[in-house]
Image 1 (cartoon, rainbow, N blue to C red):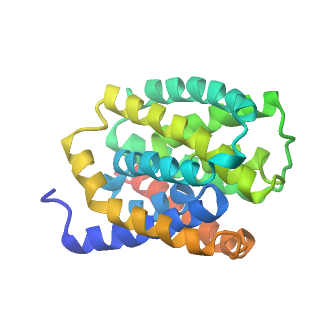
Image 2: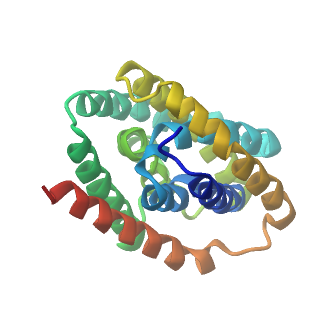
Length: 242
């Protein structure tokens, strides 16, 4: 990890702390908030190290919220995720470094658009499959898979959202990690960076347990989307520059 400084690791831990805290409160957020921040700190933290941390975080949140889990509702989204992840594998296989930055930026901006356009899809099998596929594709390439699936759960109760989204994200994160391994995007460096930023994730999860149901997600949403938009534009510019 000679190309990553201690200062960058400290900043990265702060970024994933904020994302893990948000996900513990709202059911999703470590990708939407932390991935753009990590990209600005160093693209090396993405997508592998963040996705590996997302696996552990979703296990912790799912265990805490297990009483509210309804697997029948999640299975359709998981089926869609498989399709989206396979498409992401095909995409990653042909992407250059510049291509990855450009794809990252475009998909981040798409996630922002999905979060602000105000559509209200019903929670049903068809929409769950579509959202799962979009989430799997975006999550594998950028580690930001939350917005598509969150759209179909936006009017459900907090405990149900946290439990069901955690079940979905656990499967999705594992599938994305496998896809990254197969395509060569998950090697020893990514595992080292995963371990380096896990303390921030764990601290965010613990903090969320003291604040759950007390902090309204709506108050944090504009800040999250603003950060994501800045990182998306930055990535697109980097991808387009010679």
